[in-house]
Image 1 (tube, rainbow, N blue to C red):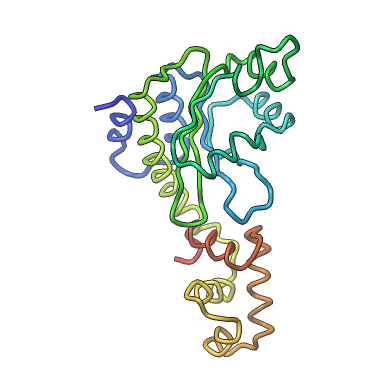
Image 2 (image 1 turned 90 degrees about the horizontal axis):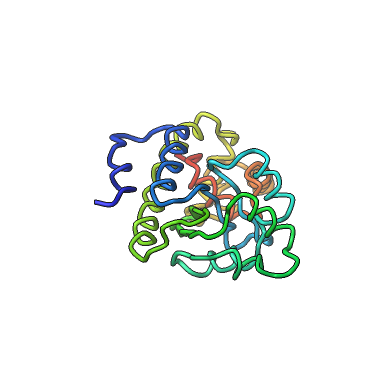
Length: 236
């Protein structure tokens, strides 16, 4: 059994994010990676190609610098992950031009952190959520076998992360009971008019509830709001 899968089996039940963050860090170190992170990837109807950091072993200073340099929007990486379900293996010279006479600020940052090569393992869900685990380091194990093991680990990790967040999400559900009712019926394909008839509300009032829910979810449209709410456990 692979090292990362042994770590997963050691968790007898869904654990909190702190335990998962520690497991992510230790799994990365097992393969020679100094940096490990879990990202949420933009959904297909997002206009911006930007990843969102969920869990990592990165230092606060590195997180700030990474964000300031726009690496969370690096189109080559994010665009590839959105369209390709296979792991993305990279090195700093090929991807960031670190071997140029005058390296870019991004390349300088990564070189200073020994963030020189790595693999990003995407996880494409059946809902609006897509994510990826990113591992990087100075001289990591990037054998074909290691990449396969880490890709399997990525799927299991996001399942555990979703379970850890599900109960907390329900406690912190920002949606009102009526907003949840409207989203649940919208998820079944009902129009605003049909939802109004079922809930004894006017079509205008239903639209107001759905708009409020969309705003709270920071969703781009009604369909996106439904998918996000369902994925986060808000409609359970």
